[in-house]
Amino acid sequence: MKIQTENASFSYENRKGGRTIFDKVNMSLDSGQIMAILGPNGSGKTTFLRCLMGMLKWTEGRSLFDGRDTNTMSPKEFWEKVSYVPQQRMATSGYSAFENVLLGRSGQVSFFGTPGKADIEAAEGIMEELGIIEYRDRTCSSLSGGEFQMVLIAKALVSAPKLLILDEPESGLDFRNQLIVLNTLDRLKEKGISCIFNTHYPKHALQKADVSLILGGEMPIFGKTGEVVNEKNIESVFGVRAVINEMVVDGETIKNIVPLYVTGRKDN
Amino acid sequence: MKKRTIIILIIFPVITALASLCIGRNAISPAEVFKALTNSQDIQGSVRITIQNIRLPRILLGLLCGAGLSVAGCSFQGFFSNPLATPDTMGVAGGASFGAALGLLFGFNMIGVQALSLCMGIGAVLMTRLAASGREHGPAVLIISGIMVGALFSALVSLVKFVADAESQLPAITYWLMGSLGSAGYKNLAVGAPVIIAGIVVIFLLRWRMNLLSLSEDELTASGTNVKLLRSLVVISATAMTASVISMCGQVGWVGLIVPHMCRMIWGQDNRKLVPASICIGAGFMVIVDTVARSVSASEIPVSILTAIIGAPFFIMILTSRKKPVSV
Image (cartoon, rainbow over the protein chains, first blue to last red):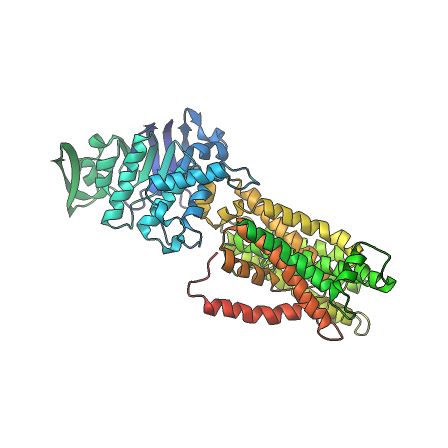
């Protein structure tokens, strides 16, 4: 699987002429890779994701999935291979966790049909894999934020997608649940499923993402995380002087970023 | 669903129907009912006629209307992701009532009244849909335009009443609007039943996919489902069913609210269980209420009065007794 954008841009039009959110984004992601999208509030991270998913149209440029322009793909074709994990908000529906996960099989069930044995087994299987099978019959409104986020991830995975798109999956979760969600991304990578996730935490990009896209600066910045998420770019895009350090734990190198102080931003 | 539950659900309306056939001004024993149904010549002609031509069509109408209104209520609640949604939310009741009142004013026969009522009911929903189109704001705009369209048709019904002849037409219109299964006949059923049955079949087939409507707009897009088609089918089926019921029985309220709620309390909100349950419980419920309506006193109590008397307190009871907030 490969997803790319070529000179993708998006602007809002208004009477005064319009506001460009991002201009000429070129990115590319292969199988089993993780990409993080970083940027200050209002830099267009969510807009970029929504354009990528076809919910908004690029003003210029295009996106390609496995070499095909996504405009030529039917929604059904696209969503057979891609799944979306929204941010966990207060669950308003009274469905159980299992019923919710089962909804993720809607692409595999015929329009006038109901889920069959295979669908039910797939839902149970994914819930067991993610370690959430024990609350299959609890209503979603009774689950904690972290548990519900895992249910949403299970729902996205039950259709066996090649690419998962997650909108700020760790936002609003506690210290432990953030780790659980992020580690899930690693497990997906091992299975060859690619992920694109928005995040407010450069640290998570440094620790989990192979490539990163940084929006909100003078130009979009894309490349290997180790190369583009550096102190210089953080300062110029976020207006924050930060320090990136490395530590070795059990033979593994782990990167961390610590913000020091706020500086003026270069533009806007 | 457990097999035992399915059997109980199917038996419930059948038993209420059979029981209702025995009840009436002249009590008829089950044995005679059975003979009348099999058209045997063993029993009195008057008994056979009572069963075949008076009670049976009425009970069939009750079963259909109860099932239709309940499924329509279930569908609208799923469509709006709101447990308070009823078939009236989009103005169909107002439109159908206006059509019927107009038909009675013009002196159409029963079939004509029914047809006009059906058309106006669907027309009202089309108006609601048109008024809300062009805005991507989701269900909220539809609800508002539905209320407005409903109010418009309510006013038009009042206009018809005002213009109608106070001696000959007004009483007929007023009683019609109060709702009754008394006009049941095979001719009416022939016109109205196919629509209701078609609607029930469509919603039954969509019963799992309807669960998707509880998701956010983005999640709906990401499901790859043809959301427009799903929503259209649900609304059209539910609307057509409701208009057909109103065109045959007048305004019968509350059934679309009570029955899905009772079913939700027992079986939860998965529409895979809720839809079949609503069909069966709704059918039986309507037959029970109508049996009470026609046998409790010498003159028939309009059925909508009974559904309201049962419905409102029942609803308050649900709201106050539940510890968890009511959710869809």
